[in-house]
Length: 194
Image (cartoon, rainbow, N blue to C red; front, side, top):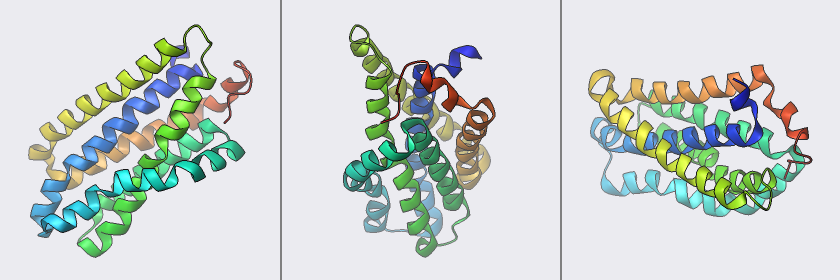
């Protein structure tokens, strides 16, 4: 357990689940479209929200994270996108799906700006390249593992319960981080906040 309580290792865990849950959520789109009779344009509006909101939120993200701290900010983003995925799972129509999908996209969209900055802040000059490579690879592995798992679960549980499963992973990680008080470990590396 001590391994995960180290700031860099916790960042790896957050990145694995952030990218995995994000891709798992996008994989739900064809199933959502089929059930709710959503057309190509509407799917495009939902799917493009992830990149679009990340683009617009990059600068404000840095400012807010500087004020509250990078780890606290990432945990807040985790909570936002986990709750957003629950919202997606209970949406009966496109009218309700759009706002919760965008809420989810906000949580995902702010992660990388802060995450990569925290990797740099928690690294030394000698290990920053290795740490950036590990951080990037961990996100890629999460994207493959969790989205593949989601595709295996959807035929068994349906897309709505799969969404609840995805959000439960995020909520569990959020609660575990609060129980272990991961923020207290930032001082071991000096000022880790953005």
